[in-house]
Image (cartoon, rainbow, N blue to C red; front, side, top):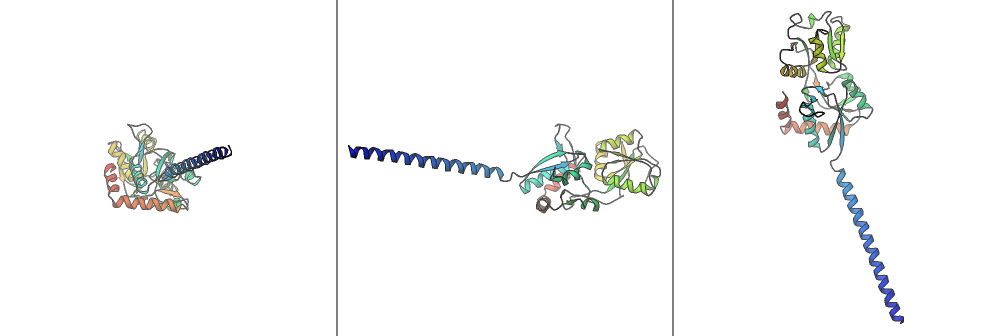
Length: 269
């Protein structure tokens, strides 16, 4: 009888030990799986929020065939850089003059919006290497025969994009007494509309943007001076964000070397 009791206790103990071992193994397996899932979810999953003003063709604009989708030269170029560097992007629609404040406050991580590199802006953000040349051009209505250069702007009204280098150039000319009033507008299409309806006489805007508009809308405006300034566009990050800046510059260099940049240029220009 005593031996039977000992045998029974031994069996119960072995079952208990086996159960504990199975439970521990299962827990360890579950923990390992959870850790693996968590780890896998972080590989190449960094998402950067990009601020853009999508009314600036051919650099960034809404796709007429897909509502809310932003397309353009800048978009394709940044997507190529993101793929090269292994991160993802999320696009945020903002007014142009709200982009730098949004970057400084942490609402966005990168500005991709046909932004000209200037000394004033470099005090507020860090720019990548230039990715395209983009000087300013003087444009008027296609039937305007009075304005042929900056010398003909005395008393004339300018329509410019708020916060742009074109607006800064207009303000400079006004301070020098070379032009009349300035109308500030949010988007390029609004500028052209004001020239068409006679509220404004001319605009000063980025050369490639003006050329792209003329290509898509022939006979509306014409360029009378395409060498007002010689500038370049850059992507912007928050001052001091050297890690992100290095990634963007490296990605830009890589897509130029592998031919992707040229393919994107051919697509839009």
